[in-house]
Length: 440
Image (cartoon, rainbow, N blue to C red; front, side, top):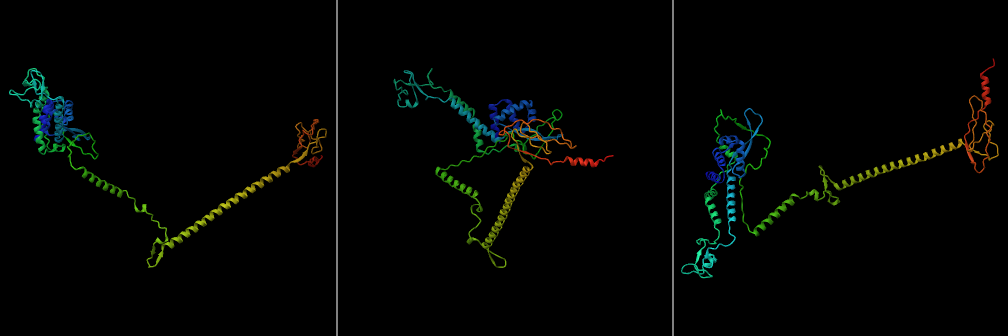
């Protein structure tokens, strides 16, 4: 843990501001700190403190754990945030950032052309170290073009040698990161303990505060039966990686065996039951078993089943006969009712015809037919007969002497039906009146 803390403090002092350094040092001293206590130690507001911690949390240099607590005099739990430093994620983040920084610097200052180490002061030609090895003179390397002695490009004033700023910056960067790289190598060789929230809480050192000037109420952790709400990645641990090296032939054989085993297990799992694939009903008489009774006698199950089948068939046939007889009886009943309806309709039509008599209409120039009492009945223009009106008093209305118009025989209807009322004798009525009243 000492190596990890030294590495983290070195990185913070190299790349962060003073207030960030104070936050990291306070967390290493107290292991776990609440936002209120950390703001009290730094002498700043909690709003400014949260901004500082947000930057460190974004760079994976610290973590935040939230848990519900109940303070004295309160019944409702309140979520409180605690800051701590997880060692595994912080070390991994530092490794990643150092590697990314060095690769970026190298990519920016890598020369696109090959560097020329030697230059000729006479003709101005530039040569690499490999090119000048073939011509060596008494005073040094000689130029292939003019034979003059070559000079080093960095020693020539105003020479056009390659830019060495990229190489110098890379060397300077590696010199500055030398301490961090050494600590990283040492950390890789030792076992760094895991510093999660529970472990950090066990090593917590409370902040000494004046209860008169800065009073505080201790809180008690609240345990709920419900699952705690997820608040993002609050805990990041390094996962163990396992690397296995196998050849393609071994891998293919192993994969084929695993695939075959998987398919066999899947087929066994999805296999249909026996009662689904094979029928349990045996229809052949020879395959039917023989049932043995308790008294030792055997009963042929096939014969019993055949008898039961015959009885069921007879019952079904009898039921069909009853249904057929029932429907036949219903058909005969409907036919009889239809015949009765037809006969009743004919009788009613005959009775209506009996009530009317056919009366012939005389042609034009003939006398009109006589009425019931011998009076003549007048004929209207439409060919109908005017009936004689009779009153209950016995007196008859005077008859009008309307002349009968001449009607052609072919225009007049041939037959007219007239309904006759029973003839009432006026003499009998007058006699009855005389009997009721006597002369006084």
